[in-house]
Image (cartoon, rainbow, N blue to C red; front, top):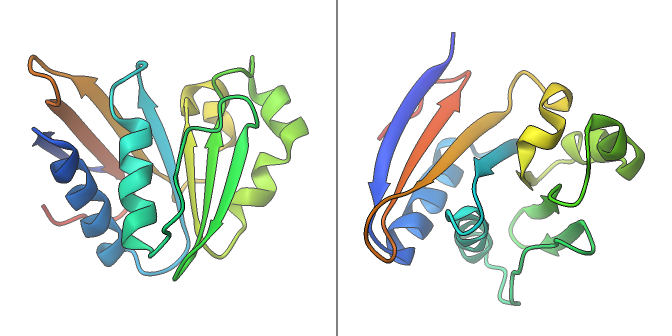
Length: 147
């Protein structure tokens, strides 16, 4: 059974607050599958995760390097599958090994390798709403999440 939670974010701060809130609810390793169009807030969300984990270096989307790793209070692995074609490309990248890490693995453009994600992954769907920073973010999780 999947549990669903939808929130509206009207600022970068709101999106970062959601990231902090999620980290508090899931204190152990976590795989996050991030879905949404360009500019919908996926990287902003990962920046919120990084800030909450005490990572003080700039966090940018690893579109060309494919993976960035950061060390904070928990490791953060930021993966971007935008340039990959399919699950086979993601397997060649070694993505499944990242899922077994003891930290947070956040994967942008998760739909490119949907079939590789573990059953316990939390899926976040980002939609752009009218307004400069307004987004609808829907979380789907195998475990209940509090709003």
